[in-house]
Amino acid sequence: MAAVQKLSESTYTFLSIIDHTLDDIKSLYYLDNGHNRRVPCYGLGSLEIMPLEVLRMVILRLNIQLITHFRRVNRRARLVVDQIPQYKQIIVHAPASIRGCLSIRTGFSFSCQDLYDKLRTADCNSCSDFGGYLYLVTCRRVCFLYFTEKTDYLPLL
Ligand SMILES: [Zn+2]
Image (cartoon, rainbow, N blue to C red; front, top):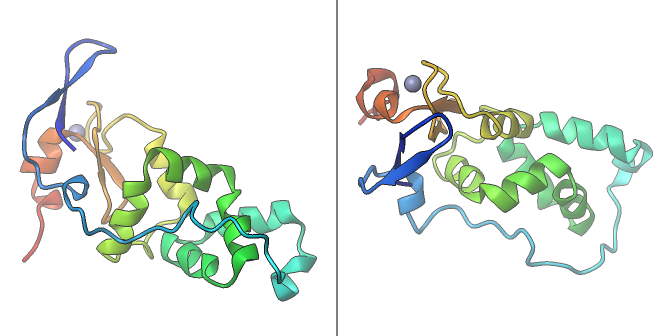
């Protein structure tokens, strides 16, 4: 992702800066969302006694890693997860956020709801500037200044 500069209250422009973010990496974790549309043959076992709305609320509280594992159980599990509105919005608009956190193995540290909430905010967690970056280690919104200069967000060797 290119850096974003705020021009006015509601106008932003992209700067041509190589910032080594996950969007530049082509070998991120592969997501199979939308590729398998066959009808499920099996149910969810004992989870079927829960109302679907309750099951979706529980899944939203799971971390991204667990949701990914749950989707692998069978086609019914994949269908249930893929139909959660918040998860669906993340997959449509910001799949790199899920692919990125699974690739760097931080998907266990925040829930799908946490990620959805962060993607829906625009402000940096550290200042009130526009937070154009999502720091996937802790699921925090950060502005370009904090992302590139503050030691909290610099990578460790
Ligand atoms: Zn900031």
